[in-house]
Amino acid sequence: MPEVLKAPLVVEFPFTRSLGPVQSAFLTGLRERVVLGVRASDGRVLVPPAEYDPVTAEEIRDLVEVAPTGTVTTWAWNPAPRRGQPLTTPFAWALVRLDGAGTALLHALDAPGPDAVRTGMRVRVRWAEEPTGAITDIACFEPYDGEPPHLTGATGEFEDPVTGIVAAARLDYTYSPGRAQTAYINALGGRRTVGERCPSCRKVYVPPRGACPTCGVATDEQVEVGPRGTVTTFCIVNIKAKNLDIEVPYVYAHIALDGAGLALHGRIGGIPYDEVRMGLRVEPVWTEGARYPDHYRPTGEPDADYDTFKELL
Image (cartoon, rainbow, N blue to C red; front, top):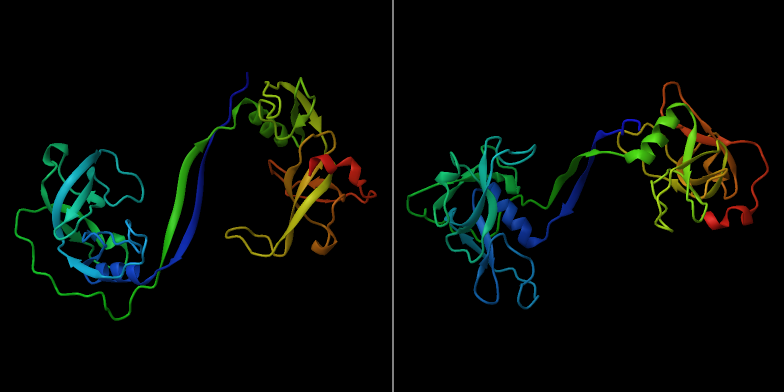
């Protein structure tokens, strides 16, 4: 059996959020080294603050300042911090109920080891050196045996309030395509497209999945398909993707390769975007050293009849 491929992959995108009055006050307060909660209908002060009452579901805006000191209610030791976590050395994830709050805030607790952490220990906020109006303005918590400091009297009214945040969502993982897709990828290296036929329904799946999703049986009979195919449906892309050197607008299509029982994705080129149509006959265009087609272009053949690809829509 050939070696199964694997590769590290990263999925990353920025998520932009507009803040309402409560979250705006909370993050602006952190920038000013003040912690604000919001009072709920049952009298509890929620930290972090919620925008709606957890009991009545009514909107709540009664902002209340709480102390930057508090008590650990529970914790878990993190012996190997990952990229982007609050600390680069081992630390505890802790739920801390700040003095004056009725709920606990999850954050990092800087401690020399798990033996130095316990439920009920007293801690305080360690502020970031350069606050920006984000939850990271609390750099972490640290052990503290002193008295709670005097409150500032903040009410949630600040100059130049924070009105929005941008959070980077990222997922790092190792992908292994398995036996069937490893064979598919290796075949693409030779500018061939290979699928697998289901022994029951006889449909050829491209890319192959190792099993028929309809019949649930294993597939191992390899079938070469294409290279030409038919556009079954498509969309016109008008928003330029980051780090993608393709000018908009362009067309991304489902393409049923000849002999395949499933359409795959591909970009259409060599034709004005407004002339792409269902039934258009296309062929792959390869670039030097590429492991997959750069795009598909018209073959010049007559369009395929709708009845020949309607089951692949």
